[in-house]
Length: 221
Image 1: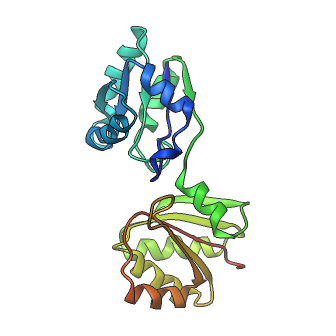
Image 2: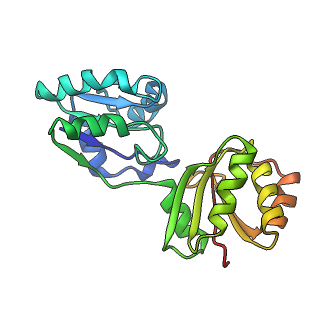
């Protein structure tokens, strides 16, 4: 069986008992970054066999994954943080396993977009998660403008290096728009900033953003 196992988005204590049981019992653990995952596994004294499965090798790893499962071996799929497949590798492998009619189960667990949505104070539904915003500023502007036309809460991942540029775009499109910047969720230096786009743009001019960021807004709030 292939088991999709969410891992903590920051605080190592947020892993579930069931996730630990699976990681201790499977034959193989497929990791986005084996070095990163080893820190989590070492923390819980888990010594399973690891295989790398990331954006650059996922397609090539499909035959090996299918061969292991067909041979009766069990495999857990994890990413660096949170729920695998959600802006992380794994979709192509999972689809191939499903098409091969091999068993799959998905464990519930930590997810940065859901955590940020609940903490934001914005309407929880309807909402739309758009993954990472485009790198190019023109495409990013179009994506944000389209989100402002929808009657729903928009959620995006954003790089700390591009946050200022994104807030600048939102300040130009809708200065009074209420924006939430949720940073380093569940970690020691977690911050959740909620203010009009223009104010957040000015704030982050003087306070460089670091860490992992979820950006949220609703056109009516």
